[in-house]
Image 1 (cartoon, rainbow over the protein chains, first blue to last red):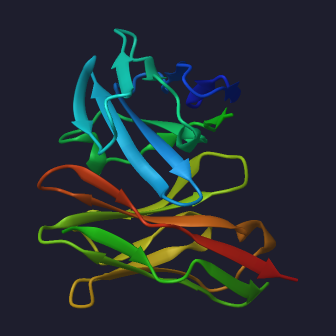
Image 2 (image 1 turned 90 degrees about the horizontal axis):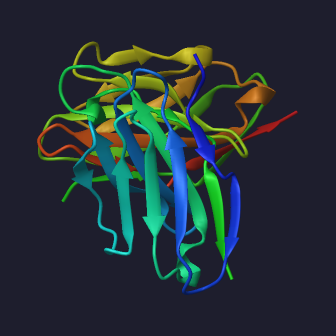
Length: 117
Length: 113
């Protein structure tokens, strides 16, 4: 099985722009979660989608949004970029199982490194 | 408030010696606990997980961790370090009551030849 893929791998934007990141989960996985990783704050949970619905959300401003499509692929959008949004954005998918995906193992993609100038 | 603390930001051990990466958590409810490893420029990979079964959990690559409720700890150990173990390790707590996922700040493991 192919792993979680994220595109693009690297991205450079300027302040005020918006950006869309894409994540394709492992085939058969319906839960997709997004994380922001920075040297200062570490790994922080952004949100989780399951069957096209946002199931869980972290403490990020409304500039961060996401969606999931019927094929479980997910996109994350950040509007009005700020310098502090520079980070590695990780996507993870979880296999089907009982209960919430947070109980299950998560399979991570390699991440998209976003640099905001 | 729920939290997870990795007590060391950096740990250095010589190849062939034991590894101990420490993790303490704070939770009012029954947690699920995970250790993930991140090699440079890679995503995270699950090493092992505890979900209220056996308190001693064995993972991949010779790692294991013991859940100690009285100490609210979930330390990661390996009897003999290998150069390929050099990476960053994350302790993760998920809280069964409200599905919050909390990552520790990470411990960077250095292996000395």
